[in-house]
Image 1: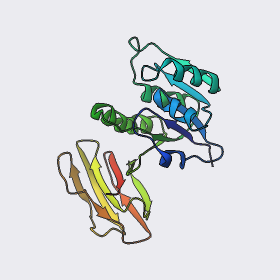
Image 2: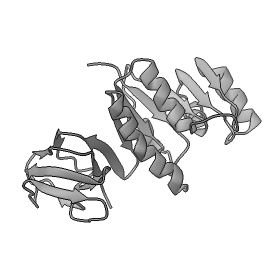
Image 3: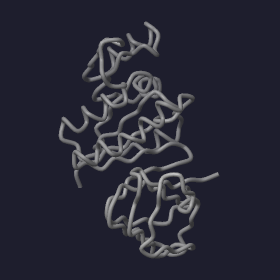
Image 4: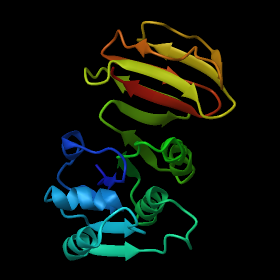
Length: 213
């Protein structure tokens, strides 16, 4: 199986994020996410960003620890540090990317990070966003979902204006050739009844959000 890129960015991080590490992962620390890795004795293969969220001492430790360091001006740049990290992972040939620390106190950054799922899809990449309470993926035609006690609830929300032809197999609340539209709550808080469920759809982009209370 192709190696993954794991991106640790500057939102909420904890031990749960370290538990996602596997042998062979390519580790990227974006801004404060790089400091989180260094503080937990994890060596980033790449640390990048404008590093406006770390102290000079933290920056020194990052620069001394990371295998590769890429810095940019906090004013003269087009992308957030998180998007820079995703773009770098794609540029370096990774087709499986996991984003950790994508959510914090800034709703604008969190929503922007969710939109990165679309960018990754357009580059033929699989991006998964994980935090302590949620896992978010994108479905574009068909997706198999396994039961996971960590995330018992599954919600389906359109990322495009409409998602058509939504059919669910193995779920408590089935749908058959349904249309989901932005602003509707029809797809929120479903549950898998079978060990493996399948989501089918014919058009649009659908967020698949697995959650726990």
